[in-house]
Image 1: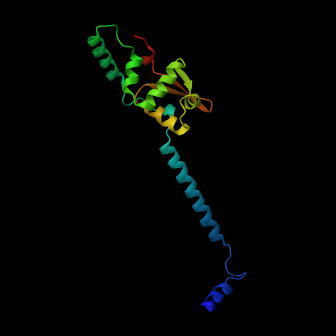
Image 2: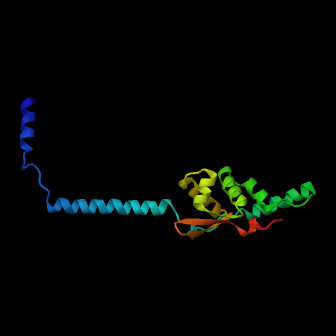
Length: 156
């Protein structure tokens, strides 16, 4: 066994391995492929907020629930924002409540700080809210300005 090890170690002298042009080309191709794959994955997994549009609006559901509640209670109609927050998931509700407290408009990084979510979680919650038509997003320097939808700002 010792002879086998000495034979292998003996073969790995100064002439054992040389960097060739083919090795350089292979390295460049590999690094380029990895970088391109990473860029594609980032673009697919993290959509831009301003490019999103409402696909499954909760507005009709909020309107019907408001009418039902006002008929049941025979009092004044429920506020739209109160009904909407009851329909939303807890994470979404916290973000909407923070927006309402701030007057309807906040920067995305302020929402993240106010609610206590990470930047990624805040982004995911905002994507869901945009798709549901609850908020809109507009690019603002290196962050996004998030605003409640107009139909939620109206106050009956």
